[in-house]
Structure formats: structure tokens, C-alpha cells
Amino acid sequence: MIHQPPPGARDLLPLEVTQKRWIANHLQQVFHRWSYHRIITSTLEWLDTLMAGGAVERSTVIQLHDAEEGTLGLRPELTASIARAMVSRIAGSNSEACLSLPQRLYYNANVFRRPTIGNHGRQLEFYQSGVELLGVGGLLADGEILLLLADCLNNLGLQQWHLILGEARLTRSLLSPFP
Image (tube, one colour):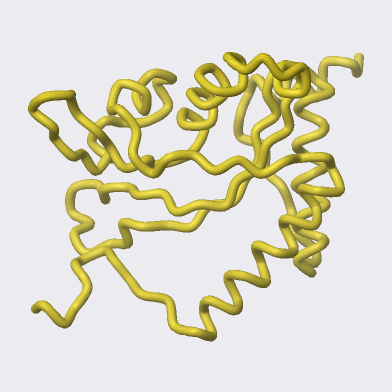
């Protein structure tokens, strides 16, 4: 048992590391082209921080209990951590560059999700890359993210891809200029 990873964990061997790095490098090229800057946040967050936006289900968070301070969780995604960093570090800075909006941030990081009931042994740890466009919204922001996504897919050499938008607000936002 001590020679096996826990259920849901996995090790990456050199070839897999090379492949992962290749993808991350190609995505980073696109992120830099679009003027996004890398942010690195803590792997651990207060459970309340992770739950604040309502996008994360408590049952998916791998929790660590600290009787003195409260409950911590391994981040299941990065949006909440980046929002917390924006509020606590960037907005609190005296630097004019840090206070300017919009902020274009990207990340490459491990995230952790407890599998749903009945999926014991499923993967718990994932590597996630993405962007956050903070301080701007609406049609232009939605369009920027979609164009950046297309650029990422093309830069990875993916051909004949199709994007299906399942978010009604996003679809309405993109179609609103048309009669």
C-alpha cells in the first residue's frame, strides 16, 4: 500500500511531463500575446473563500480542518483564489500599475476536486490553465475571452474544433448587437 499512490492520485513520468510542458508553453505564448500576466495563488484557501462565489459545491472541496483557525480547502478551481488575491494584494497595493483595470491574469496550477459519490478512485488532482479578465464585463470582455480561446486552440494545432456556448447570458450578450 505504501508503494502505491492514494486512490485518485497519479504521478507523471518524463514523457507526460514533456507533453504537459509543451501544452503549457503554447498556451503561455497566446496569453502573453493578449497581454495577460501570470499569477500564482496559494493551493490552500479558507473554505469560506472557496465557497464565496457560489460556483463551488462544498462536497467537491477536499477539506483540512484546523480547530484553532477554521477550515481550509485545497482549491478546486482558481477563480476564487484570484479574486481573493486581487482584493487582498493587488487592490491593497500603493503601486499605480497594480491598481489599473482591467487586470488580465493567467494561471497554470494544480487543482483538487473530491469525486462525486460513486466515483471512488477517480482522479482528484488536475492541472488547469486559464485566464481571468477582471474589472471589465459585457460584450467586449466576452468577445476577448472567446477570441483568446480560439487563438489557444489554433496555437495548440487543433483543427476543425467547434465551440458550443451553453451559458444563456453569454449567448444573449454576444447576440445583443444584432436585430
